Image 1 (cartoon, rainbow, N blue to C red):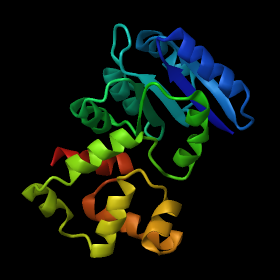
Image 2: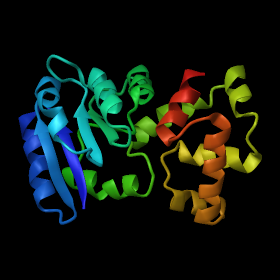
Image 3: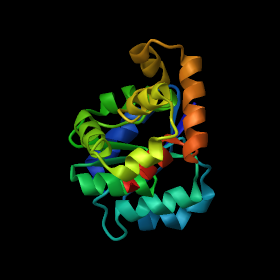
Image 4: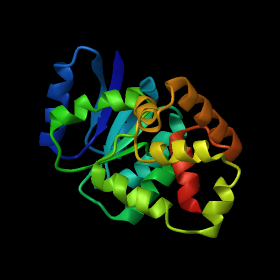
Length: 209
């Protein structure tokens, strides 16, 4: 059973997500708010949820600021942005603040829950358009990027490339023709060499370069 929180001011979308949660056996609703202010007033009464879906265009405190609040309070929560904003600078800012996923509206609610399995398997929940923007940005030739990744082996670099596309460990294993255990070992080595603890930290560190 995984817990899920929602911070979304679109009442119709929020209700639709809530209704869908009630139909999924292994997912429960932890909280649902229409603003960051309402969420922050009751933040301390909730246990850390597995996933929080947050809209960027919230009234008052923005979803962008909200990511920082959530990440500061809950280290391991998967923060997934749901928005119609596909500006690459906004996407990068969200990731640098601690977001683990970025979904562009409109999307099908059913697809949203089908893809929770991606998060469970260690993947990033992002739309193809967002993945392309991130991939192109990260792979722009920059000396500092080369310096940062120069300590990685060729295979570790391959794993990083696939990881940043949003692939799960299993999918990386299939793409590179290696076992899931080997993928996990490579990722552990990458985290140690680049001094990060998660994929979101890795992505943020690369983007800052």
